[in-house]
Image (tube, rainbow, N blue to C red; front, side):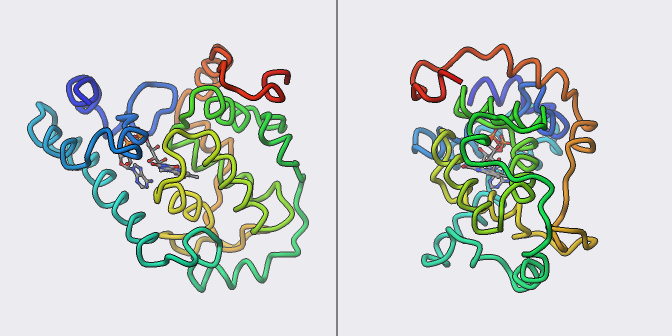
Length: 237
Ligand SMILES: Cc1cc2nc3c(=O)[nH]c(=O)nc-3n(C[C@H](O)[C@H](O)[C@H](O)COP(=O)(O)OP(=O)(O)OC[C@H]3O[C@@H](n4cnc5c(N)ncnc54)[C@H](O)[C@@H]3O)c2cc1C
């Protein structure tokens, strides 16, 4: 927290969206396990020597976005962990696009081992499996692409939930569910209609990859050391 507040917070407003730099707090797993309270971080941020806009951008994530997730799970105890938690406009658009042809279907195993044709997606999967973390910006693309690579929306949700909660240190958290549901349109608005996604916001690797140095990020994930705690099946791939 001290490192974040002193060295990263001043540029947080711009650096937070760049997976190729160490530009966010990376405190979500400490929050998840209760090692740090959001109040403690909020006070440290308030006192920090950093621009007001940077502090506000951070507190927006820590307080507004995070508490929205806690509200979701608190007030939807029966359905926060399924696509039933999605709003009516998403339910309607999913019904209309359920039979759309998917360009490619990947199995859970192919996804888990990062064996798709998409280098950036594979890199984000590699980051998650080898470090227990995945940067928020690629996490959004990671979730969106699985929607078009699975047979239906239920399967996409189940795979995302499984991988996120199996590998991420901050997994099994209210934010996990709000984050995955966001990929399906929760807390978002309808966008231009297109195959499979219907009116859900669409993200492409090409456009996401232009917003930061994706080549550098991909190369960095290739330098990550194998995690000795990985199951043999993954180590051997
Ligand atoms: C598909 C998907 C899955 C996700 N799964 C998880 C998860 O399992 N656990 C988890 O904690 N977050 C999850 N998120 C939200 C977000 O990606 C992480 O909270 C963030 O990347 C954590 O990194 P950080 O601590 O450096 O965040 P920072 O940018 O430093 O943000 C500060 C804090 O604000 C909160 N926060 C940031 N972004 C969000 C957000 N979009 N929604 C809610 N709270 C947020 C977190 O507590 C975070 O630690 C997910 C998002 C997506 C799109």
